[in-house]
Length: 268
Length: 319
Image (spheres, rainbow over the protein chains, first blue to last red):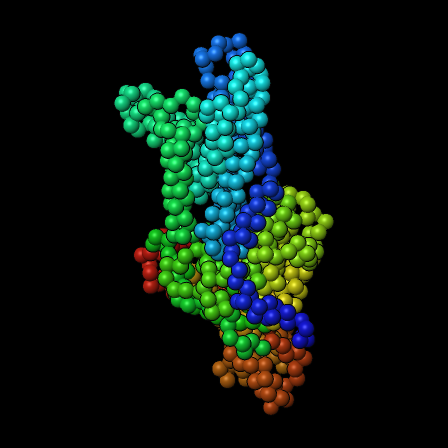
């Protein structure tokens, strides 16, 4: 053994002085991780495809319809109801696959700041979903309006720009909500079922309830509240666009808070 | 040798799952500069202990410190502790290189170091391949690469030899010994006693979550009741009588051949010389580490059965 081979000791001595904030490194790490699995690309490609394709099909069916009998903005953006499933599944999988493969232990052995890890993960996924969602919804809008020809409207028409960007915001928050749900439930199937149940199935089931309950309860459900941001015709059964988005953001924040509490208590 | 202060300190560490106690008031230190073998039969609580040291599982009571601080207090732990806990602790769809890159970035480690550790474990050629297709041995190499990312002074490896071929075993044994020789702390768990005899200098042996031994490999073997001496002599009968008269226990194991317990080889040689007995062979039959280990764990099991007779069934079914 020579003195020059004792490098680890110097590394160990240097370590305590390296105290940079952990979040930037964790964001870079999670960004690299999300870009290096195929499921990310498949999910995002599926979201874009259904966003544009479904909107185009719906728009094509309205080319001969009369003005005022349908909402041209929402028609071109109707693909979001399918795209949200792809984003939700992706958000769940980025964390549940870590638990199902024991990758989570590698992750936490490299970064014991579990809260920061999940916040970085949710942040990266949310940003990706927002960006892809906004671009897809803009393309879907422009394509849909072009298909509708004379029935089409421009981006400056009431609610159009708000809806287009709103879809990006909705999908971004949905991605964060899904990461939180995945962290809480930890199993892919259970977390996806919970997400679909909350966003799609529960509102449909409650549609059979009296209108008074629709107006007081159903519009506050996560999906219904969030979708107000890209709804053009608002009435007593919906929240106003930004109030709805704020309620949805609150759901995402609460889910994330619960996830962080459980993360501290549970064994990895 | 290991005169430095301990880099891993385990203090009264306990982990209970309901009524099952997986780790039971376990205390030991791990020192730098040598390979410490962490031994125990399956279900002894080795992996649980290692996960608690790494802050992955919360102890029911007790604590574990790394360089004097809990693991979770380290902001860039890869520079201090490298861990291999599970040979499949990666996303199967991610390539080996990208897996390491993701972990490296979490501690601000650059791509050159990722390439370096890939080379070190011999995975450079398959760095772009999806890790899901790796064999167990390749998974171990990938796990070892991730443990070495930060060039840490402490390595904690859970059963790193599982799934390796003979060449891989020799490689990892040499690597671990050289890492320890560089002054690093190397804690390696295993249930393969024979492998630990070749790799480790110090042993921490546990059974049913309790400490059974914390000593050098030699001392653990020596403490075993299995050490015997083998003697070949044309006057074996005469020698056996003399040995028996001195309280030793000679057994005739062949023509002119004795196996003797209860007396050292020095004692046998002196006795033979004093009585002008010709000796053709006098050798120590070292207990294998397996024998020593069986002794330790057997005692532990008996002890628990005797004192907790009513709970034995549930504990065994849980283990």
